[in-house]
Amino acid sequence: LLLVMLAGSSRAATRWVTEREGAPVRWQAWGPAAFERAKKENRPIFLFIGSASSYEHYRMHREVFLNGEIAEYLNAYFVPIVLDRIEYPEVARAYESILPATTVFLLTPSLEPFAGAGFVKPDELNRLLVINANRWASEKDAVIAEARANVEKARAMKAKRIAEEAEDLLALAASPRHDHLGGGFHRSADALE
Image (cartoon, rainbow, N blue to C red):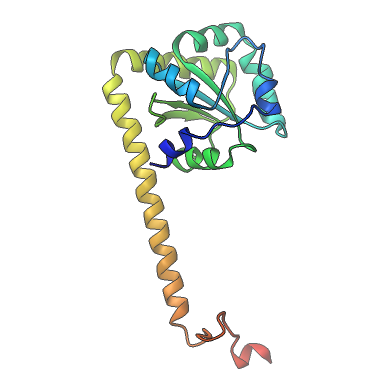
């Protein structure tokens, strides 16, 4: 549900996004036009989440995405989308909750992640792209099921984390040091000495 809500958000292109224009990879900004293209062409999405303030993201752009072979492959088999993590922190957080420590995500046209990587060198990214383009072509249903399972696993983990936090709060509220009228917690008399 969150991914569907996030898909509807569309803002003006940021510096990070506009600086990708004219690159060998035909980047599209995060938004409905890119999502519609992925659905229409039945292609997976290659999502690069970056930031103008990150040296690693600039380095990856320079070392990886300016590589003609990678750009050609991305343009042929994926819908490449670039997203500014400063402009869309909610989208970055949503995907990173599913695949932590990841900058590059491979998504189904319905925006569910099925693979990802952090900073990668050109040969590593090339391998990731070839493997997953082949998987999409030959095992699309399995890839979609895997992506849905990733989302469900993230939801379950979030629900568990929320339940654990609620239990902790209930335990604190039951504590004799909890001030039920004024709120907060008081230190014991021993702690004040």
